[in-house]
Length: 61
Image (cartoon, rainbow, N blue to C red; front, side, top):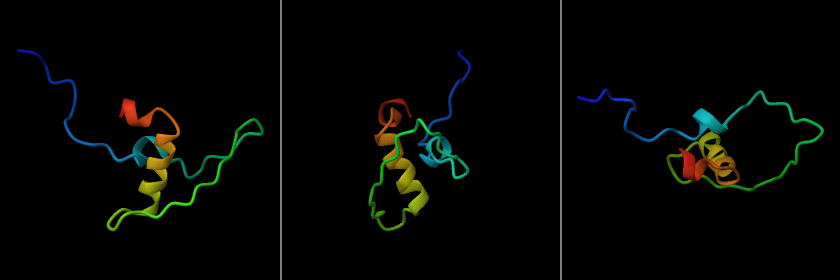
């Protein structure tokens, strides 16, 4: 029998795409997005989901 190597379920985007203490570098490109979270979704999770869309998050998480 194979060992279970993963935990089924959905990760919150903030677990990988939310870094509240990040300080942008001079070489970083900054973008501003206006987001309105759906009812029941907090703004940090919504912002992290937008960050994932701008990265590889939608096809790697």
